Image (cartoon, rainbow, N blue to C red; front, side, top):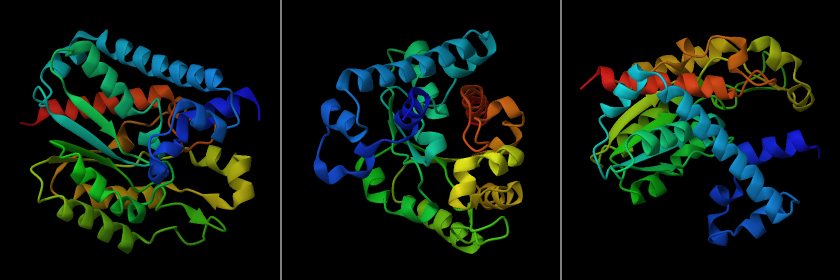
Length: 270
């Protein structure tokens, strides 16, 4: 496995989230799962951490954005939880950039961010995380799901991994089951993909999987009609440099754009 692929795996795959029965996994054990020396594993994690922090610094260089961060409705001591899939589980995700933004701009406010997203999760699998979300007693839940539901298998006209009817049921169930907590809920729609890049990406070709924007648009519409605050990421991530070479996952610039859109939305509404 080459260095670029190794770095990509570390960026998106986090075994500690899907193997909780093993208890807290040390860096040595996690490194072994990737076939890496622990020092190499720690360096790759640190490199991603620094990239996300640098993205936050770049955003805060804009005085307007920094002023919005000061006005974010996260009160001192509050707990913000994210649920989602690889776009959020990404070590360079919008949520990780937001973590650095708050640490840099509001370091004394003690706002805790917990990333419960798991790469590859569908909305069906996300339902199984609700006990964990409830355990954290969040004040805010930020939810971006549905990209994997919209994955088509076998061919471009094959079935989606989860039907739209089931996706809608799952998203409503997620929201309804969380209403017993006093947490404020925010939806973030799945971004669109670069369909040409998705179609040309050899690992997707070999696996017989693909994504199409009409399917993602349908998921987004389900979210937008739920009545909670929603950020429509489809209109944020609109340029090809905002995606990686697979056309599916967001580049650091794309993740920055989602972070900025989320901050805009949260400060635009009381």
